Image (cartoon, rainbow, N blue to C red; front, side, top):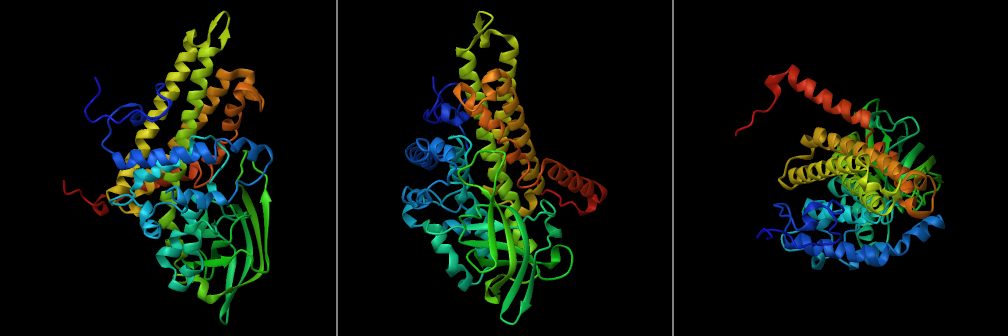
Length: 431
């Protein structure tokens, strides 16, 4: 007998192959609005991405950018669902009461359900590069880019990392020197996702002294003279991509400064924790794909005269994969609930950091065990194990970008140690 508050079954009902609330279990996080939005997401992915993804990857081409406008027409976001962003979407696509973090979680999960490849990945990058413009940019700066990105006509990438400064953002070296009514920008940027299809960059530069207080943000036209964009080959398959930027005496109008000089690091912090939630949600679904593929293969595949599922060790692997995946799903939802409840982003550094570490470690475990279950079929890019082979090469793309596991674990430990060393500074709960 179904629970009165149970959700209607949706998608694959094989245990563990979809999130629990897709399979008839009740949840206090989701409502009818979320169910409707989920159906829109899956219908769009099934019609516009799933039939074409393999071809895009095989031909090593970028997915059609017209998909952004199509997604908007289907009621899906083109630049995330932050409050400042969603107010710019057509009112017809915004549900009553507005979007909340669980709509975003659904969107990210459904995009990842098609498998690795980065389809519609620029929409995620838009969601990271646009908020600083909306939060701190002048009306003139916003008018250059916001509406065009929302409509799907243009794209914006976040240009922070450098060859010598990845997670160590405070030590970036690219400089912007004020000369009259413009800045002269020089330097290099590396691992700039979507740089080859970006029309603008939210560019982190050094306008002052050493450390994070010397950083500023500029909105830069990607077609400006002096900018060279080179696409880099990656370990993982992608129809999106990442790039290396060289900035050689690039002139940027001083009016393109985002906010105030010296406050760029603060503006970037508005994004970092949310970016880790975004990565974690997609990574959770990738882990679930490892489990789903393995389970269904193990039922079919026979060794030593019996199905793989009759071997106790294989059942243990499947059970352990699912245990970690469901714990990760719960963690994603817990962090999403913190955002929905209005907990300031600045207070979620430890939670988002630990979530991302848990996500990449879960994915790494599931990809490894899926490969063991598929055996030799997981070593080749064809046949029944081709998706698992692709997933395995995608693991480091979750573990490193957005803050490596080591950096994030250290962050969590340092914050805990600081609080333990000065308990009088720790805010007391009123409960």
